[in-house]
Length: 244
Ligand code: BJW
Image 1: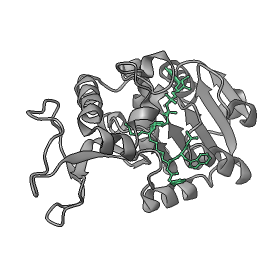
Image 2: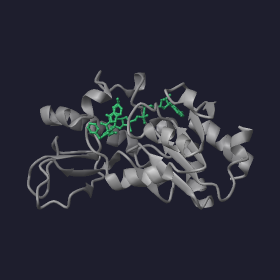
Image 3: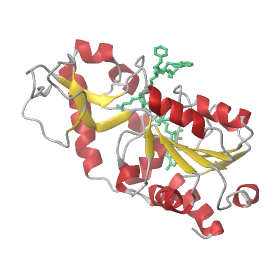
């Protein structure tokens, strides 16, 4: 911990990669492990375009359930510390795999969202009349799957599913941010790529790498410092030691 604290200076280039665990204390279920299950479906079986093409109603039921659940959640102490760091440190970058919007809700200035947002949608047929992707805050739907207001076809969640490309601009920005002094991976199982690859990239750039997670992951043996515990506990402990 001392080795981390002494590196967290005002001008340090600090990059934090977050995953579902950062929102666990807010009540958002993680993907893997027992609480990731919904009606006995594994997330990997639902978060694909193939699954959506086969049964859009089933996949939308999962997303409608998650939207209602997330809408009732508030950012926790981990989100709040990261929001504070985004204001205090001039060279701070937050990369998240989360689609819940809780980093934004806690006031983090800029968030690189690798996997999109659960609060955005787009036309499944990519109809010419629609604006590409748009915000849709509904938690209740009259019909599932919901309809595209522009062509009457079905809409899909504005998230990145397995086998889909991530936004190349976001990936480029995240890759640049992996060239940093301190790279912290927080609340992610570190199994989904390209996100998990940024930890290796940061180490190759010479960053001091840190993992915060109550459990071991494939990244644990590769980082300089593994802090075992909940993000909502460990991040405030670090913040208290550095005074912000
Ligand atoms: C706590 C805590 C507390 C609990 N505090 N912590 C290279 C190698 C191998 C495979 C690939 C590769 N490159 C690409 C692939 C394929 C694939 C992939 O990674 N597969 C692996 C699973 C093997 N990747 C893709 O398909 C990506 N696309 C892509 O690469 O495009 C190019 C391409 C296309 C085609 C072929 C090849 C390349 C897209 C990935 C999209 C992932 N999408 C999802 C769903 C998003 C939408 C939605 O939310 O519905 O993203 S899947 C799901 O996993 C979600 C998450 O963002 C992501 C990561 O999960 P995360 O956040 O780590 O959560 P969990 O649940 O896994 O872990 C939680 C952790 O928190 C645990 O460790 C707990 O211990 C911890 N925890 N409480 C701190 N209080």
